[in-house]
Amino acid sequence: MSKVEVMDKYLDSLEKKIDASEIYRVVNQVFGIDLDSVSILSPEKTKSSRVVIGSCLNHYGNKITGKEIRKIINQTFGINLDGISSLEKAKISLFSKGQWIIRNEKDLFVVHTGSGDIDVKVFPTKYFTEQTGLEELPKDLQQSLTRIGYHYEEKIGSFYFKNPSGQAVPDAFKGQTIGAIVEVIHNLYSHL
Image (cartoon, rainbow, N blue to C red; front, side, top):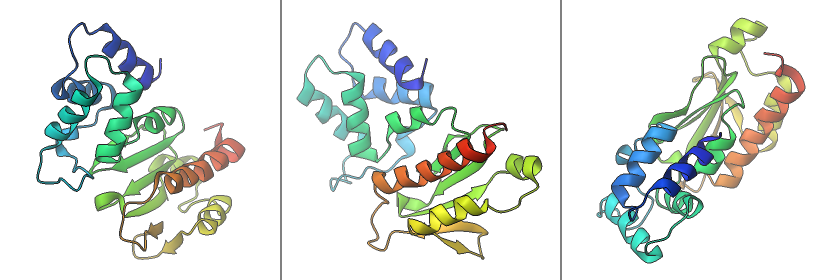
């Protein structure tokens, strides 16, 4: 079962109204993400994230689906749990919101977002280097990332993108980044 399916099955098994604490607990248990340590995107930053989540839940009443909860989490924190779940076996480590979201010892590449998700760097894992002998991203991936706006930043040894608007990198851009990486893995490194 995918993480999304596990989350939905658990939420469906609850006989009580789902509250913010229960959502925080299930997200931590299933995805390993501590929502208490993540800043909210809302202009109401003076409110605690649990208050924001609680008011969203009140809007839905007693019946809310896992899909609706994941939408609230994405709107509140900028964490796309559906997207994260789809990456479970993609061989990509993901560092975002100050914590590892996905990380496995045989992952090939790392997507690392900085504070506020304003910037992103992509680099190979130690495992990739051990398996291929390459210490940099493969040329196909370098070209794909360059086409969508990345450049090689020598100081950090990574392909790097910073959103010129100063806002968080949009989900669509993250999707393009992941798509480029997945394509290279599928075409060249699926055997690893």
